[in-house]
Length: 259
Image (cartoon, rainbow, N blue to C red; front, side):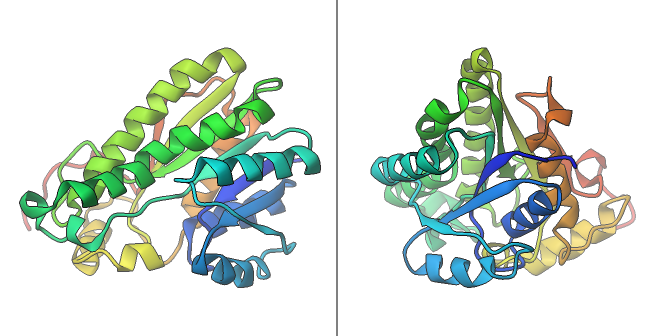
């Protein structure tokens, strides 16, 4: 199996529609042993969701903006497994006033929250898990949304995703000496709880389905989950600093002259 014997940390599982849930499900089916994280009130929901996995697992308390909680999770995994083969960073948040077209009015306090949670937290998590990974190497994968263009409505989350891509590249540079690969999966829009909270999500999703040459099902996160599991596996050895688009080909298409 693709991930036979791997021990992986999966962040960001909330509901069965979460991309992170698909990654966790497929990882288990491919032989991995996993642990999940979430925090606060969301942890209770994640615990219920975790029971729907092929093999129910723990949901550890971890706010990725709190170094002490990252350290506590690393300590727990050290005691449990002794090492870590990789993790999925599926963590993003922007305050409501950071989205929806009010780009010019968004205050720094809200921007700072978006960037810290959605981009800087990847570095914090990598730093915290490095002692568990640097001896044998491994893979870090983050969930992205193509930041090469300015999307309508996405605003400061788009800026945060650009930051995430840059953080991923710099981590690839600095962690390569430990045989740790760092990559992003740039997914098309998926109808998750987070996705549905973005103003104008339905319009974006409809446009995506029409323009992507392979089509795009906003209710099916499995293609994204499989791509993430490929990057978490040894089959991606030699791939780092990469942004893998799993979006039905949307990112490669020019404007539709007939629309």
